[in-house]
Every structure is written in structure tokens, then in C-alpha cells.
Length: 236
Ligand SMILES: C[S@@+](CC[C@H](N)C(=O)[O-])C[C@H]1O[C@@H](n2cnc3c(N)ncnc32)[C@H](O)[C@@H]1O
Image (tube, rainbow, N blue to C red; front, side, top):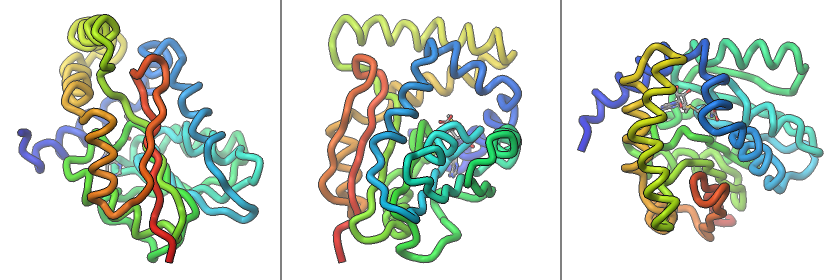
């Protein structure tokens, strides 16, 4: 078990360092699948006119921007713990003209009133938050009754062959390639460890329920390397 305060310091350190190469590394390390995964989430959102969406751990803003281009043109707020990660997001927002507001903040203490958003999304961020259940309870608080939480996250796949290959990729290739491009192999070793330690889809759905969310379900992407977990704030 990692020490919580040390884990948060490490997360801040890693994401402060990786900003200039973050998007490039995402594309290279996932063979561009990450673009498809975020698009899948943005297309899955069931939004009505005038919807408001919060993207927690928005980083360089790729999911927030994908959501902002949803057919219902929602107002999207992207929030991240590490202000430096928001730099590229701000540039993308300016060039796209998307309806996207960006702010620095902690996903476990959201600066919004209860029942503000129609949907909350978080992509590859929940893995970096030590107290996941408390964080999801906070996301539930800012959801309107009946609103949905969408969590896009990696999990080591269950199938024996794919799992064996993927664990090898995580242990060897990811830290090596990540280190080569970012100059920081240790950070990529840490990120690989957090993927291996992340709960199975069934365990994660149980955590969603422990946070007070209902009707959890999961959808596998790319042979179960990435998953979208969806659940709802109970109706009023
Ligand atoms: C792997 S990046 C994901 C960024 C983006 N969502 C994407 O899909 O590329 C993880 C992000 O989570 C952010 N993060 C970690 N802990 C957080 C917290 N407690 N609150 C908000 N953001 C957090 C990090 O700063 C980092 O930008």
C-alpha cells in the first residue's frame, strides 16, 4: 500500500514533468487507440440541450474537447490538479473555439454546488487518486439526480495470452519508450504499476456502488486494455 501523501506528491511531480510530451506519448504508447477511446466516451454521453459536463483530471483536455463537440454542444468544464497540464488544453481551446472552461482544482474537493452537472467524465485520472471511493462520492455530489459518471481507465486484461503480453509491455516496453521520449523512465514505471494495481471491472463497479452511485456497467475497449465504467446518481 502506497502512502497517500507521497502518492499525491508523485502524481504532481510526474504530470508537471511530462507536459511537453504527454500527448505524443499517449498516441505512441496506445498506437492512437486513445483517440478512439475518448471519442467512444463522448459519443456515449446521453445529453439534452443546454447540458453541463465536468471532466475531472482533464489534463491536456483531449476528452473535454471531444465532449465539447458532442451534437448537443454542452458547456464543458475541465479541472485538473496540475495547472501545467492545462497549458496545452488552453491552447487547444483557443484554436478550436470549443465551449470549454478550464480550471485548476482537486477532483476530491470539487468547487461546485451540489447537482450542477448532467454528466461527469474522468479519463485515465481515477487511477492517480488514492481515495477513489471518496472521489467518486464527490463526483456524485455535483451530478444532478439521474446524471451519469463515465470513467475511462486502463485495466490489465483478464484473458491469459493478452494479459501475459500486456504485462510484459507494461513492465518493459512502456517504461523504456516512455523514458526515451520523456527522459523520465521512473515516471512511466510508476504509471505502469498503477495499471497493474487497478481493480478488475467487477471490483471497480463495487467501488462505484460504495460511492453511492447506482446501475454500474462496464464496456471493454481494445481487448479489455481500456474500459468505460458508467454509473448514475440515484434519481431524487
Ligand atoms: C493520465 S492523465 C489523464 C489526462 C486526460 N484526462 C487524458 O485523458 O489524457 C491524469 C491526470 O490526472 C490529474 N490528477 C491526478 N490527481 C488528480 C486530482 N486529485 N484531481 C484532479 N486531477 C488529478 C493529473 O494531474 C493528470 O493531468
